[in-house]
Image 1 (cartoon, rainbow, N blue to C red):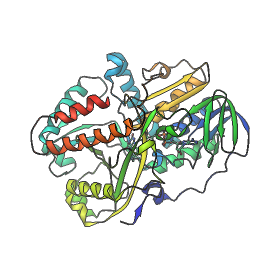
Image 2 (image 1 turned 30 degrees about the horizontal axis):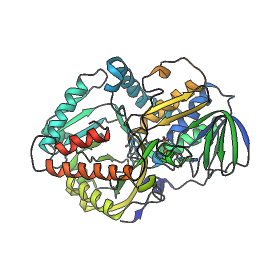
Image 3 (image 1 turned 60 degrees about the vertical axis):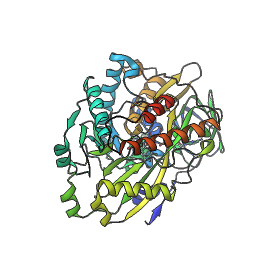
Image 4 (image 1 turned 180 degrees about the horizontal axis):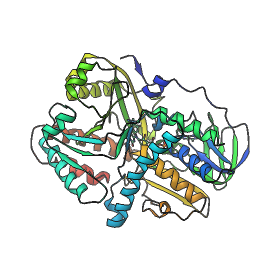
Length: 454
Ligand SMILES: Cc1cc2nc3c(=O)[nH]c(=O)nc-3n(C[C@H](O)[C@H](O)[C@H](O)COP(=O)(O)OP(=O)(O)OC[C@H]3O[C@@H](n4cnc5c(N)ncnc54)[C@H](O)[C@@H]3O)c2cc1C
């Protein structure tokens, strides 16, 4: 393997950005946005599009796209984080429809702004590789199909293999509302687009505290009527936010480009994103230049909510992901794994994403997407813009708006609980690989304890 960290393979591939100037001292703005990932950039984009004379300042500790937005698996998908059911029948259906539209909205803006992010809408395929996973797949299909706007199809082993030949796949669940993207190209293009609209982005500027009317940084204070927190997995680093969202690690490896004869064997012609039904699940994409980018959990959580250094990931995670990738696609072993990296995503205690604005303080927030933020950040950005501008739109009455989760436990309980949960999920996957149809009782228990549902 040639690379580990360097923020991500995606950034290494297109080159790390030169860097924008930091905040030059105290400044005034109408809206200050903390964090230049997709959430912050989308909020800035829609604010400026809707009201061009608004003074919008984005404050970023490193550079735009440094976080999960420049490191992810590139699934631009419609999933409702935390599940639709929590919002009731009508609310869940509205949230789902909004997510479907969001996938197309991102594609539309990328086209309109000339952002070439390797977008390809081939849908999302999740495969089952054990009888227990297959049973879960069928249950998931029945559950999904009982909702409007989901458009899911249950595929048998032959149809699945005709689409993507994954070793041992017993079936698949497919839906059309997902596109493959190049994460860093989207982040870079979006940052350039908001600058063209007149938004100021200050990089190398760390916000220490967010208070009503101001964001206090290491370089000065930005006074603004509205301050929006868009820091997702990094949120515990902000004063007073230590227990809001847990920074969960996710890691990825990417192969060298694979030759034509590999693709003749495997298919995967429309580049649908690929996942599985394991408890410690994987996610993958076929890249525009014919690599496989393959992700999974690795070491889930670092004590005290610490985050990685510039995306470096542990050797044992690299080994585990490489082995799983080659189990799925034995033919991929003919080329080396070229790069590995990791990033953090934000997990609320109840696993449900949220967006909101407190009109009394002018403080807004969005995040807690638990690994499905690539599309959701756009919905969050549009919603934040409407909330700030006081627009009475359909978006501001979606059920996730203003949602609050309880906070995470204090350390060492939090660390012990997360380690225990992931040990349980690994154990459950091993138990299920012996061939039974039942979901491991250990995983069921872990789901109850974690507040996570499948
Ligand atoms: C490895 C990995 C794979 C993933 N795969 C997928 C996927 O395939 N599909 C999907 O939908 N989701 C995926 N996700 C999740 C998705 O990437 C995130 O949900 C999404 O990018 C979050 O965007 P964001 O802007 O809210 O946060 P981020 O992109 O993390 O941006 C937050 C920004 O805030 C900055 N910041 C933090 N603290 C401060 C501070 N104090 N002061 C100033 N700036 C600060 C950070 O530097 C960062 O740039 C994945 C995540 C990871 C890590």
